[in-house]
Image 1: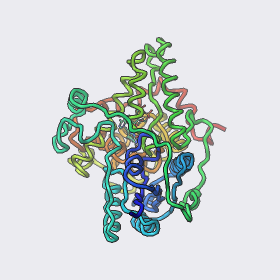
Image 2: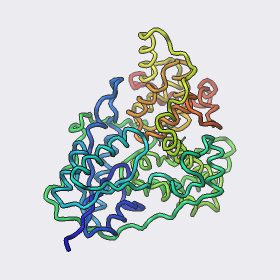
Image 3: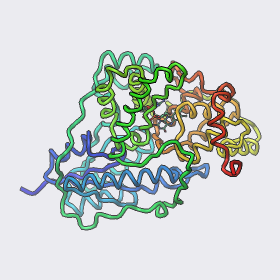
Image 4: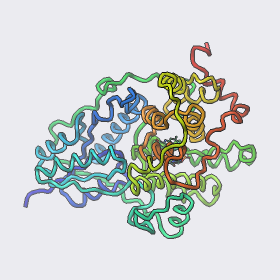
Length: 433
Ligand code: FAD
């Protein structure tokens, strides 16, 4: 009998640990062909002239793919890397390596699912099946206590029911070895310039370093518990409000360098002594699930169920000037400008900063929230379609999700006093010198 080969198409699951697709392919086939495609779709300009992927996020992606290749090589495998449309590349590789089936993780937002459908159709033409796995959420879709169409739109109700009536599955094992066919041309990692992007300049003011890949993600997870232990010891920090428990894991979570389940079970292991901060972290993981499931339930309607009641400026020229001033951190509101400078320089801002700047764009400048969301899509290194568009739509009030915790979203003035150190450090570079 001839050997069976399964092609594993990596997308936003750039890890070998807790990766059901990889593990199942190894169980079901004699050989596994891991492939990553840099799809030019993600590096083109969007209608407002911005890149879909900015250079900081693209660099993080390149580092993550390089790390995945390294990890696969360490267990005897290889990662084929190509630049091009996966609907063309995957069928070609499937024919070249006599592949029997293709596996991948299902996505939820429409651009990503359109690409899967295109790949599925192309594979079908050569009589190959694209098998979809569910693996990006904390709670498995099949373990939810309700069908997708009945998922509560209220986060509070969703949380209550899921926590009461469902469980988070254990992580799947890590493969010790993987057999790939003899690979003729594994392909090179493209340079940023090959993707049409310039090298980013690393701003020394950045408080965080983000290096892509599964190995760094695991280090960051450890670091997060060290930080939480310190916060727990320092009771004054909590009382004075300096209780930032945030894990800074979002860029790795967005690319699947680490799974939500891995984070969850580590949190549970640390929970006894650290309940205040660890509970806050568990809540945040659930928000991610919520936005993803809302997209699954409503599709595009989740971000367009109602018209925003904010009236846009009628003068198109004025509108453009205001939007440019927001993007460039030139609104004249010190906190907004400082946050936008931080975003532009580092690709990462806190959740609170995102709420403030989004609320300001929507409520004060009265600009279409979709323009802001598209700008965040380019700039954020943790960009994730459901989280970004879902949070923006939530702040804009255009969907039916209730129980918003975003009451604080548009109050920059009160923040000014407490954030003066921050504002000073995020002046435009020219003003500092
Ligand atoms: P932690 O507080 O440590 O939380 C742990 C994880 O939970 C995060 O890494 C993230 O994966 C998830 N999470 C936390 N809060 C949220 C939330 N409100 N919605 C969804 N997931 C959440 N998050 C993204 O991952 N990608 C985005 O593109 C994105 N765009 C956003 C746009 C706006 C306008 C707003 C208000 C929020 C956005 N968020 C997005 C959510 C949130 O700001 C970030 O996930 C969080 O700041 C990341 O920092 P952290 O890893 O330290 O989070």
